[in-house]
Length: 253
Ligand code: 13P
Image (cartoon, rainbow, N blue to C red):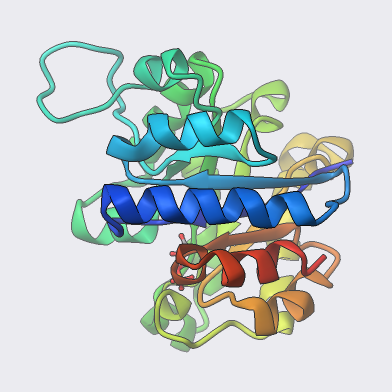
């Protein structure tokens, strides 16, 4: 059965020293709790801290992910980081297609698909973000928007490959705004995504894929969100920057 996952996306926050402190605190907090065997905690720090996070992860319960990856294999692409490099650093996960990258760096579904291919070729699990902007929800287009993102970003994969993917539904209007989707809105969209997966790959495959919710998720609302049958965890921004808040979400299952 699919895993419950709580992943922290630090985005472009924290100095090296602050990151060190947060990882240290997270490690000691994780030692105090016993998490269910089917729950996975992932921390996605900025690139310069990824090795440090990996060192902590070796002695702790969490795993490490990157926040972005190049769509190219290797070569003259100044400033880019390849999936091959991440693999060689023993990184297991990578966020792809976050709405901030789609909005500020013009990432398209085709680019998302190419990045997913790179990650899978190098044995990393992609955490693929989808979600509508406020205007699209107001026009009741959210289901079509997410359908297109899922189809164009992922449906070129075969059944074996898609089971390596984690999907994160992040309604853009809920990210960093303090405005969370209601538990009903989240469940409705997650069920929609699972239906798309079922139609394409069959129920058995669709049931193996974790679908996370992201957008102003915090200790006070995580329980209600995670109680839904198709919400398999969260992709956490702001609240992952404080060990206590992140732990409050990790222990919400
Ligand atoms: P917030 O939790 O800060 O709203 O961010 C969510 C997010 O974008 C995680 O990727």
